Image 1: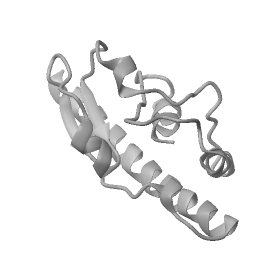
Image 2 (image 1 turned 120 degrees about the vertical axis):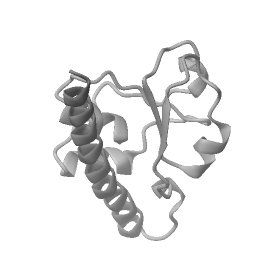
Image 3 (image 1 turned 90 degrees about the vertical axis):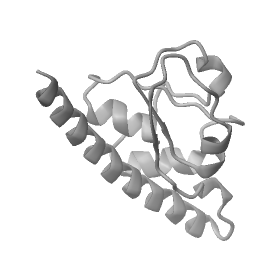
Image 4 (image 1 turned 120 degrees about the horizontal axis):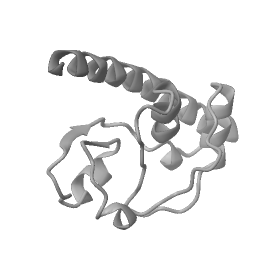
Length: 128
């Protein structure tokens, strides 16, 4: 979800990759929550962090505590950020309760991504 938000809210100005420690597939409730919010996850797939080990990053943002613990050391020492968010896929209950968990996380992520974009824009202005 964070990948889709960042890619679309930056209007493609930021190259974004998302990966996990134990990737499976895109969760259908994540896709539904994103579609309801007007964001498309088309073309995204679950990836392992191992697929990105050789990739250069300026920033690495972990969004769950588990990933923060297992995130490997990456080349070029990117700036690290951590957004401690619960994994909505772990929520148990009715279909509606589980969907609401994805909606909550989507709302939290979009706020954080928008804030990050403001900070990055300010940083670019300062560097010039």
